[in-house]
Length: 329
Image 1 (tube, rainbow, N blue to C red):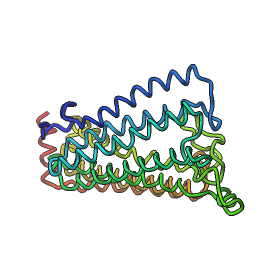
Image 2 (image 1 turned 135 degrees about the vertical axis):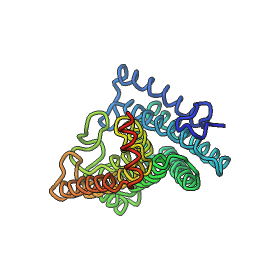
Image 3 (image 1 turned 180 degrees about the vertical axis):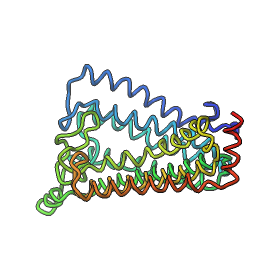
């Protein structure tokens, strides 16, 4: 059994199917890098190996984080194991189909309804993604009932899991027909593509380096990415505060760190909502309008004020203890 007092615990205690999935993603990442170097094929105006590379990095980190989160599950451990296993199975199948459809067949993976085979692969991949979303949500619920000694870390795990669930939900917004696709459906009674990453423009247009996020229209991949990686961001905030506590004794109060983590979580959630709102309006991440900038400024100000109030509201007893520690050093 993992050491209950150690937030890192040993790798042996981590969920094995998820660790195996992360290892497979590492192999795919290495192969994708070679493919980017030596395979000049393109798909939808992007290198054909770019999507496997991006997805392998993202899912590899996600799987390792989820495996670590499950080491904190004491109540419902068996259920947690099954949730993690179903996540690994669903995403693992999706990646097998991703490589087959994109690299072997040279065809788009998402939203492709051109042939019965394309449609079947797209539907299975969507099913795997929904399975992963449901399993992440189930793990988030399990974490609500766990006793984790460090209050800041406990809040970080809960906020991070909730944000990941919301980030996955954003992806479901991509699986709706665009106005152009709806027009084709009404005219012909069928369509070759159903759904899109971009809003207001066609997929495959000008995009940012590596990520490919649209520079001319909205892109739902941005809030989706930000949301799912809240699973790493919030625990990193908790660990960062713990490290800073070595230099700033006031942060040795886990009550204060918890307040700061909650502030960061609320700010992160606000960012997720802001980016989703921006994308849904068909606005590029690199060309924000006045209202987007105003909302972003308000969000930053709110987080700054909340963090300041948290620091000033440190209970007197905790503040005195911190001052004693400072003097002793």
